Amino acid sequence: MTILGLDPGLAIVGFGVVETDGYDVVPVNYGIVETTPDMTLPRRLSVIYEDVQTIIREYRPDAIALEELFFYHNITTGVDVAQARGVALIAAANAVTDEQLFEYTPMQIKLAVCGYGNADKAQVQEMVRTILKLDRIPRPDDAADALAVAICHAQSLQFASQYTIR
Image 1 (cartoon, rainbow, N blue to C red):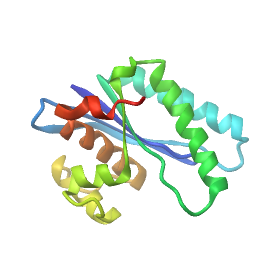
Image 2 (cartoon, rainbow, N blue to C red):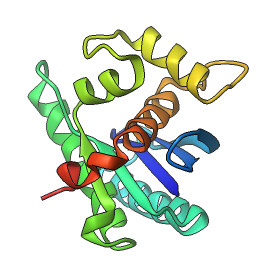
Image 3 (cartoon, one colour):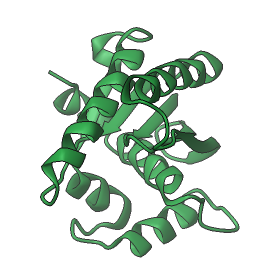
């Protein structure tokens, strides 16, 4: 099974592709989709949509998992990130069935990857490196976070129906 994990953001969308046989999780590729502040919001959203579509076409995932949004500081930034997440979700929804779309909270991802729902970013990144048997922590952070989302889904397969997007 091929899983695409997405860590949505307006400036950077992290993506991580893994394969799993239900036991082992193997990295396929990871990276980012990047937009810049000098771009208009519609152009940034368009780039995210087009690039996520390209990633989906290239890897043909059996499942796509996104991190749910969680923010508590700047509502304006949160709205922009929500728009970027929405665009990534539309790109995913246009490529797979609803039963192939999943979302996880940050706490669920940390719990699945680290065994501790309040793990810090460094702990999550080190566990991503360890689980995927990588020589170094994936960079940038957004790519490591996206791999964590994909790992979370791989480890949640027996309960996957509970995490489909409704």
